[in-house]
Image: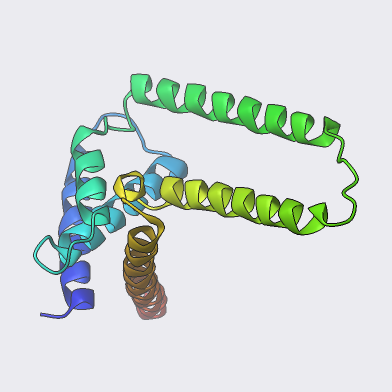
Length: 184
C-alpha cells in the first residue's frame, strides 16, 4: 500500500476514534479544540504511515512518543498549561526583540571585513540550524547538520503528502455536503 493510502486509512481510523470519544464527552468542543485534534490525528497518522522500517528517520518516533505522552487538550489542566506556555513564549519573543533593537553595530575596517563576514555567516548558520532542530520533530537528536538536513527533507516530503491527502479529504467533504444539500 502506498504512503498516501496508508496515511488516509490511519487518519480516518483516528478521526473515527476521536468522534466516538467526543460523542461520549459531556462538554461541547470548540472549533479550536477540534482543529487541534484533527492536526494531532493527521500528524500521528503520518508518522504511523511513515513507519520505523523504512529508513532511519527520527521524526516518526518523536511524533508518536509525543502523542503517547501528551495529555488530552480537552482537560482544563492541559488548557491551562498551554496558556502558560504561550505567555512565556510571547514574553521571550518580546524580550528578544527589545534586546536586538538596543544593540549597536561596530564599524569594521580593512582586512577585518572578511573575518567579520565569516563570523556573521557562522552565527547565522548556527541560529538557523538551532531553529530547524526545534521545528523538526526529533531534530534535536540529529548528530550533525547533514543528518539534520536529511531528516528535514524526509519530513517535508511526507508533510507535503499529508497536505495533499487532507486537501482531498476536505474537497470530498465539501462535495458531499453540497450534494446532500441539493438532495434536500
